[in-house]
Length: 204
Image (tube, rainbow, N blue to C red):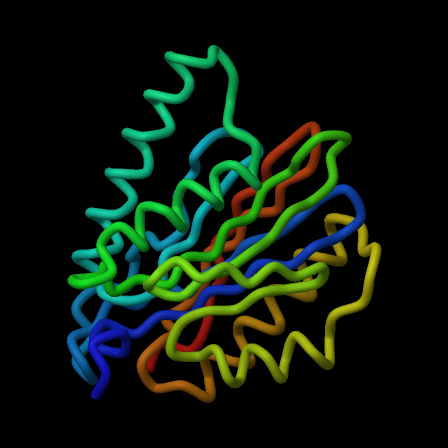
């Protein structure tokens, strides 16, 4: 078993019309044993920027603390919030810096840039970025997520339809992966508001 699969995870971010959604499962396991059913994988950097971290749970928490620290320093120095593209470069540099003993995390970054243009990207544990215009996935359920998102996604969705699409994609995907699941956590971010919802899924 790969170290990335040790705790299990499922992460997906999707773009809509001037909005984006990011969702994760809630299971924390040690291989096939479930330890917790309310584990947080999606973190707020600022009102219009979120990061999801799949992979090893200890590294998820460590990496988020380091990124939050770096962003606070940036806010103090620049007196503004970081753009999503800038933050993606920061995460990439931070991961590549540790390439000989990497953080076992695969981040998914989602944010609203200038003129409320959504930005999503994912990267591997060494910080190699993969940009997308529709959706990005990460975690142990990534293969089934690709399939579900590919069939369900359509461009320029309104926030409510985007929520429905990402939720159905996540729930149907984690049912096909025994290392992730136990409900879901969804954020839908528009220029004026953030909606946070918890999904109920199969509890097995």
